[in-house]
Image (tube, rainbow, N blue to C red; front, top):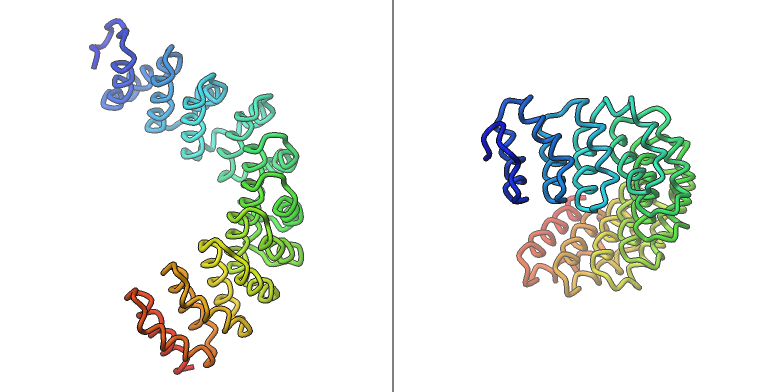
Length: 309
């Protein structure tokens, strides 16, 4: 590390290491070096400074970090956004409204993500506007803010995003955001989500059905089970069927005990145990011979659970 008062090195790697090692200095000296590095000509140094300042939390970090959200280098912007999101700064409340209206989409998205855990009054207003933003990251973070608030008055908006947004990433996040309360709107959205063109959305829809315990989704889950080609989605459908204990799914689930992916066979055994229908016993007894020891253990557990009632 350079001695105090020495001229800055011409080597960006040396300057980056100086930022890392600055945390060993007294806090005022470390903070001064890190803040100075925010203006370094090299992006790698600015990004390192954005990460390092997280170790010296306080109101001093906010305006410089927010400035880096508009840095020309993407890696620097992401480092600044990550630090803001992780630090849970109450002080951000004081300058939030100044930055949320930035004309740069990345800045709007990053500020929304940073204030999400703070539940700032008025954040919902900007998040609702953000649902219509042309930027996918802004829409994603807007969904995140509204989902984190868990205010039932926003469920209709979130359900609409889960069904209609053009981006599968936004639809997936919205499917997860509505999983905290079962309403007619959320039930309809997650059931419809089982037919989404993107398998990640179908996976999230099935996971949300399990969390919501949406019993009306049983028939749609079984139908999805028969058509699904992604094992990740099948596994989540099996979890959901077990959670809602849909007895009409016994045969369809039992057939999954011979699926090629062992994770699916495990979930099928668990699902049958949760449903608790004796019609599953012949299939489960066959599964005691499965080549995967975990499948055999879970089949034995399911048999015991069914027999004991």
